Amino acid sequence: MTEAGAESLAEMLDERQHLLEIALCMFGSDATADHVVQETYRRWYALDEEERAAVAVPRAWLTRTAGSICLELVAAPAPDPAPAPDPAPDPAPDAAPDHVPGGRGTRFQPVPYPASRQAGYGPEMLARHERVARRFASACQAGDTEALREVLAADAIVVSDGGGKVRVAVRPAYGADAVARVVTALLIGQPGTEPAIGSVNGRTGLVLRRAGKAVAVVSVSVAGAEVTAVWIILNPDKLQRWR
Image 1 (cartoon, rainbow, N blue to C red):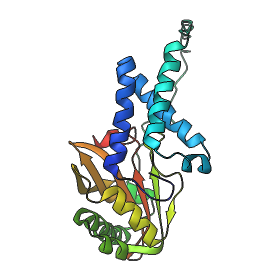
Image 2: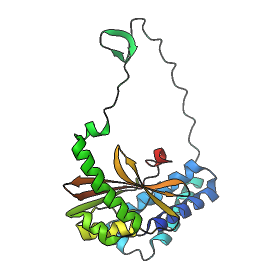
Image 3: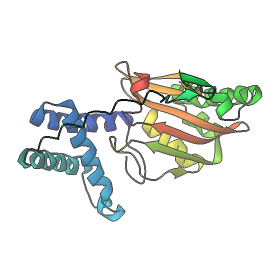
Image 4: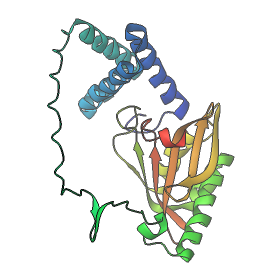
């Protein structure tokens, strides 16, 4: 995704896969390949805005950078083996860690509140959120940009989280028109991608899957009958629970 707009989700996923394949060819290790991709994107975001704007073909720059990181890892000396950890001391007989006050030796198991209680949402607010979120999700599913724009507040915001593992815009986009453009370019009409309405953090949202795997999760904040904020999770680590 460029700073001014958005590439498609399919393009971003293909770009990441391309970089992973470069590293896998060198090392054959998923963990090392993932590290190479993350370091590649870290160096991309280390550039200032003018430097990024001067890169005519970002994919070519990323390819060269990933290759350089692979060569750096190959040339790096092997780290010294870590010393064996000291044996853990025996617990004192009277110790009772994590116990419930007044209940010696019983481990405390915190029970989380429902998401609605955590967010301060009552039944009416949850119902209203679901109605608005479903309008938003249905517009995305139908590829209806105009319906999407209508459900967005005039001062809406969209924020994307790639976790340094997917190349997304660094800054949020503001305003209904800008948010609609980003969401349309990123999420609507993606080849091989199946958008489905689902539960995201206990409330209605949108989950996009490709070949059965979640590639994007979208949640929204609502005020009245409008979406005020769109949160798009693209970070592969955070998407594991949806897979």
